[in-house]
Amino acid sequence: MDAKEIIAKRVAREFKNGNVVNLGIGIPTLVADHIPQGIQVLLHSENGYIGLGPAEQPVDPDVVNAGAKPASVIPGGAMFDSVMSFAVVRGGHLDFTVLGALEVDEAGNLANWMVPGKIVPGMGGAMDLVAGAKQVIVAMEHTAKDGAPKIVKECTLPLTGKGVVTKIVTNLAVFCVTKQGLELTEVAPGVTVDQVRAATAAEFCLSPQLQEMAIS
Image (cartoon, rainbow, N blue to C red):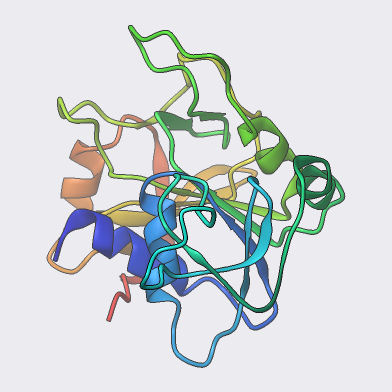
């Protein structure tokens, strides 16, 4: 199974009926395709939607998700301006924010907006999203393209949010962020704890209930 699909499937299992969820750009947008049958969530997008749905045919060029990919609006969904969209975020109405990261550290600090060696205009809505949601899930591949760990002892890149991450889901493992640090709660099928340690620069403890990641 593709690494991105593993991550998306596992993240989708976090939600319960009625949750309001923001899905960020990249891997998080894939989560919408894997929400378990019978679970109904409201997908929020900072570009002005609650009740975002999958792409429809023919594609409406005016309806896109946060990554500018074609989407739809489910019955009962709503469209609004950025002021209302960020009022939802800042008002504490999001149950989950799911977004990618360049680095996450042992304290749940998140760096995801400054790409090394590239000029970027700013962090967009990420700072608001991680500050306003009840839970923040980082959905990312475990290592960078060059093999460098993305889960580190301490972030070196500019922070998007300090101590905001509650859970990390990668293609290798699931970590919960606790007051004592990172706790490994799940490993992907066929992956060992030693493999997770080798790909992780941060310290972590093992959950007494450590189990195999459920992605079916």
